[in-house]
Image (cartoon, rainbow, N blue to C red):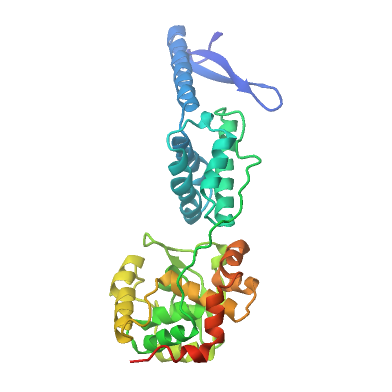
Length: 359
């Protein structure tokens, strides 16, 4: 129906939907003539029909990215958006479903995804399920599919335990001994004695270290892309008590600014730290011990710390807090079932001393 407005324009209204209480939702189109207003209305309807048709045939890959950008990018922190939503989408959902049309994905297909992830921890699989279910829930609201095929999916059992390399107690002592002498040893020393992540280490300043009360505060982290921000999760913000040995080590090296500095005194990027500091230390150390001490990654130093805590009988709730795990299940799956060799090696500490000769 066309009506003439007080300003002389022609208005055409159409009904485009209903509110929750049953009232009609109308949309108006304006023109100098009835023909112009009708043309605008027809163009809008054609564009809407085309967009709906495209959405009806949208692939899971395209919808997952569109969903993340529309519903998550501006509602969660950048770190959460990148490390939770984009990580799950790019590493699990897109590789598995690819260009499969969203509306063609059935419950059996989703179950297949989780069957293919049986080597991932329950925490990882639960995260995948939550993200995927949210993607389908919003697809239903947008009339792109009728049901959420994630409902009733079984995550299955964790079928593989990834054995990360660690140092035993003697090897740890030898690495700490060498770190005390090496110009680049402070980062290695801190990761082995506090379990902080590499990114947390690179963001650590001397103001975060309370030598009066022997507490190290983790408040920030340097991300893989070099950005400076909050730790991986809220649980990452934590206080780590340390012993007198670390106190004395830090007291001798106390400075200002960042504990690990770049050439201008700022924080180091992870890639630069690995190339210029960490790898140099590991090269020098393995040469010093004539390759009788294995080379570990920064994450494996952190894992060594957690493993040795557990080997000494520390409960997983304490380990979770000190390590900064957001989910207790992650801690439990990694540290509850102690490797028998680790336990045996640490119980037979005196015997191990005979196996390695310090050069």
